[in-house]
Amino acid sequence: MADDFDLLETNSTQKTEKVDVNWGKAIDTMKSKLSQEEDPEKRQKILNATLDDVVDMAKQDRSTLLDAIKDLTDYQDEVGIKFEGFSALNAEEQKVIDDAQKALERARIELEDAKNKPDTWWNNLWGRKSKIKKEEAEFAQAEKTRAGADNKAKALFQTRIESADIQTLLGELSFKSQAAVTRLKNREVEIKEVEEKLKTAIVEASKNHTKALEKKKEVEDKLEEQYALLKQSRQELDEIADKQSTAYSEAIGKVTTIEQKVEELEGLKNAYTTLAASKDSFVHKHNLTIKVLTSLRSNLQTHRAKLKSDTEERLKYYDGYIVALKARTDQEFAAILEHLGVKTDEHIGETLASMHSASARARQDMMENIPVHEKVMKGVYSTYAEALHEIREKDIDIQKNFADRYGIDMKEIFEDYYKADANAPSGNDDEPAAAPKKESSNDDLLG
Image (cartoon, rainbow, N blue to C red; front, side, top):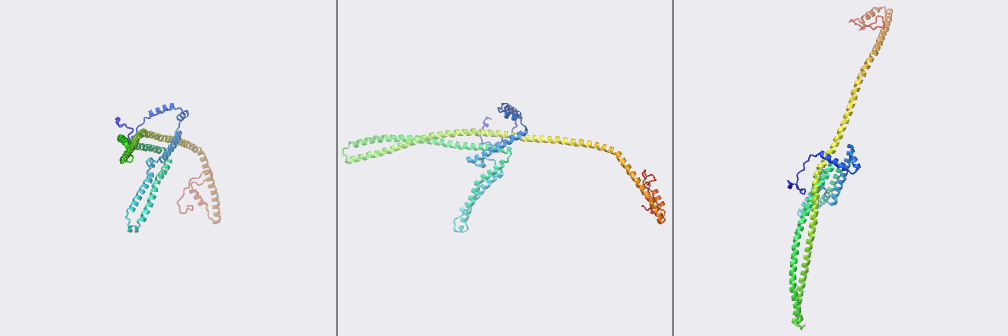
């Protein structure tokens, strides 16, 4: 409905829903504007942009926004706008102001309670006056704390904004715009109220102007009568010949009375004339003031309507910008993952290929080492046979020594032992002996 479309209406609290953006159309529009770009460096910058360039541009956007937010916050102080009424304070920052305000209210109540206690000898004895003095000091301190709460909250706000991301800064800018819309609306209402008062004043001034003119006319009519009487009285005075007579004195008195009346009426005439002129002047002044105020109110309406509408659109615009920044981050993250994936694939491929080639090489080394192993084992067996031969030779010496010393023939015992040893050499030192086969006997000296 056409009646529902009113940019000047600010009472609506309906929340604007997000809308889907036709990115295809947006891209076409961007290309169109790009072709119209007069600055060749800027055009080339857009054409050759990389994701890293976008990061630098986003940083510059944040820096510009941060400076703007600081300037706006400082401007609030300069024009006397309450800080907490025009900035998006978080819970911690708002709590500084709220706590100071609550402390001030408590101090005010306690001071009033102390003063309301009856001023009696008994109450004064129990410290009424000292209590009042104490509460006055606490109230003064609470006032001082409340006065500084705005600055303290502002300092916390500025510190937070310093490290805020671009989304927070855009949100703060939007908040200030929305707060400004409300402020403009309140100012329009204030101007409208003054306009209505001035209209009433014009009506009253016009009435008083008319009344003054009417009174002036009445006075002028009376003056005409008095002028006629004064003229007649003066003629009568001139006609009296005896200047020392009572009649002459009475005539003089009559003339004087009429002159006084004329003087009073002329004074009234001047007063009503001045009053009429003054009221007429204020009619024009009020009328001029109304015209100026109406013009200002109209301009405020224009700014407010545009700011309100643009802010609503800007919120959607900002949403797109923030999502685009996040998408850029996601895109970079995906590229990093892809890069890591490729590198991982390369590393795993290298490992698998190395594993296969190492395995094949190990098999080759194993095959190549078989003759070496055989040669080593031949040496082992030869050494073994040589050691057994030396042992046998030494056994013969031992047998002979035993026979010579004890008369014991050890040959039979040793021969039985070697017969029982399947691995004992048979006299050929180059051949390995067979594995020995032990006999289970309690008389086996080697058992």
